[in-house]
Image (tube, rainbow over the protein chains, first blue to last red):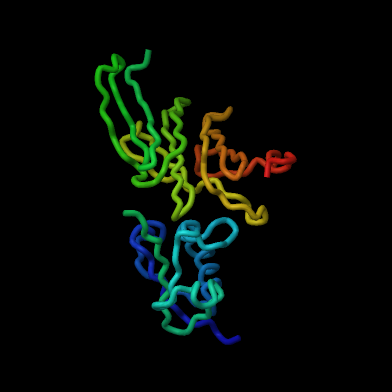
Length: 95
Length: 139
């Protein structure tokens, strides 16, 4: 496998306090899973908000690669290509 | 008798702090802190410098412990919250109980799924108490 593509992770507003106010993070990863593992190492406070102790993305969060929800692709094993934008958004509900 | 009376009130919308003179004729209400996130347990810790604690159980972003060092004028998250070790295979669902321990900064925390955590530094770091994990029928 070649060098990992560089992708952008868009950080939802409420979570920016966990990564020094940054709205975007740049990581190199072949898959969403690898991108999250990168965050676990480099942005551990942010990671704890996104994933539980078992490594699963928290159940009320949706992960998009560009405009696709990863649940409609290969989940967190969805592959990434250079320039992809990964967005993690909380579900909105209520009346 | 204490000069002031402090109440902490955990709600589904965060934690409120009610503050009154010792006669309790009227209370001033502050909050909510941890706004919009359920708080199932609070603790007024009067050992040493008083501190207030609240469990903040966010279904979106996980469980956190809030701490106030100024009698409820503001709260901040502790450096970390209780969390199962990776090899345990479980994930925290709720923090149901916060209690003071033996040392000045020792805290106990009861969680769902049934487990007990302990902090020696006022909530900045937590360790699971392994004995509970090994009681048959607890898991």
